[in-house]
Image 1 (cartoon, one colour):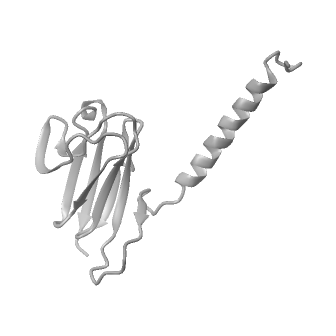
Image 2 (tube, one colour):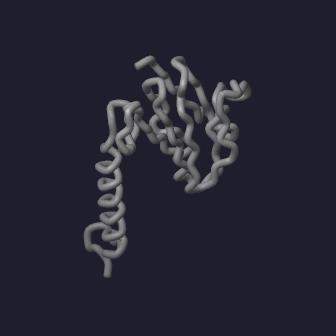
Image 3 (cartoon, helix red, strand yellow):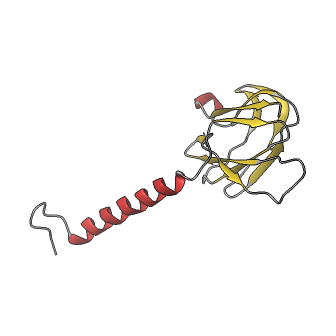
Length: 141
């Protein structure tokens, strides 16, 4: 059955409407984050009060690319992309040696605890030259 107005199938219209609805739900869900744009995972109560932040690896980007955290906080990178990626401290072509996740396939994660204040640039070994980079800024509590 075709639409009289644009001569496409009704099924095609339904498909577009479903895709728009799905996109809207995803955009609303992605709005659940802290001021850094990162999801914060609630940890069991500890005396330290440290937090864990999650950086999603998707669409050849780190999301969020920048975080401001405190000494003792943890960052977990989750590869939700179908492509293999890394999170490597330093700048593209110039690793600093602070951390290197190694290859992370879809569904894999890497966790790092930041024990010292400072700025920590990082990148993906495969796509850093194309702009897949980030920056963690760690401040004293």
